[in-house]
Amino acid sequence: MSKTVAELAQLVGGRVVGDASVTVHAAKPLEEAGPGEITFVENAKWAGRLAQSKAAAAIVDPSIPPNGMPLIVVDDPLCAFVAAIGHLVDAEPRRTIGVHPHAWVSPKARIGRDVNVFPGAFVDDDVQIGDRCEIHSGACVGRHCRLGDDVVLHPNVVLYPRTEVGNRTIIHAGAVIGADGFGYRHRGGRHVKVPQLGAVKIGDDVEIGANTTIDRGTFGTTVIGDGTKIDNLVQVAHNCRIGRHNLLVAQTGIAGSCTTGDYVVTAGQAGIRDHVNIGSGARIGAKAGVIGDVPAGTQVIGSPATPEWEHKRLVMTLARLPEMRRQLREMQKQLDRLCPRPAAGESASRPVGESAISSQERGE
Image (cartoon, rainbow, N blue to C red):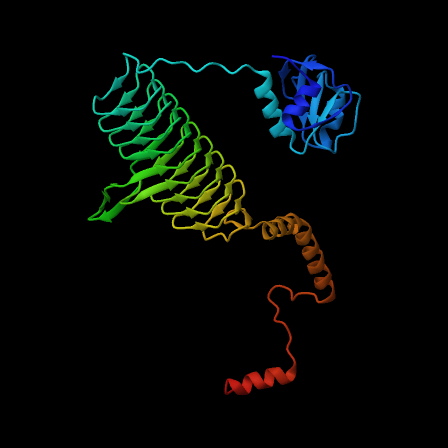
């Protein structure tokens, strides 16, 4: 559907600079936007590209100067752009297929209202599924699982038995929730498996990326807090307790029995060893290797992970090492000129007193 710039500004809570009567019918990123389309820019470093854009209008932050294009000025251009998309794109009506005849749903499962179970999905005994859930093809829901309302399981998601999923949670294709944790004891020359008898509890409004794995607790429960967002290819090991509104970016690996507070961020390929506590608001840098507790609000980076300021100082020092080595060699050359070293086979001379004392000490 089409909207004028003035209408969109009112809908997203922005202020118009320029021609408010211009009509737009779609929203596109800066590199793709053309005539009749609105884009967005978050900071002034993109102002030059915006001036060259063929977009009909833009949603910008207050740092962007007027450039002749109709602008909607807001404090958060990205959020406003997302809202604009919602007003420009007709929502696709939700399909209603019910339980497809090619799905297998146990007669002992309890299914809520307006639930879609697609062909090839499997729902085992004693499963409880809330209202308006979507169970896509190839998804497997094990015994005694509990799903809240408006849950979406994309194709080939696996929920092992006793997994609990909160309301409005989305789990993307290939994710495996509740597999056995990696627990073994070395006994008699072999690795003996420790039974993994626990469960997984996922809170409300969680999103879990494709091919992510979250292991069940050994005897207790692995917990993912409300509002946490987990990227693709993340591993959360057994007995972890992840707080609310965490962001775990792709290829993060969290070993067993770790806890995180609320609003923790782990960047790509961060690794956290077992039994570590990460305080609320902490930020773990990309490829960081965390081997100890991280206090709340701290930013760490590097391997082993250290506070960001300390890591930067170390990197700057390492960058200076070649020059420091050159200076050291030059100083050594100067010292050799001032104090020549003895030639091969010669003994360095010593003061007479020192020689006499040494002779007395030896009893000579």
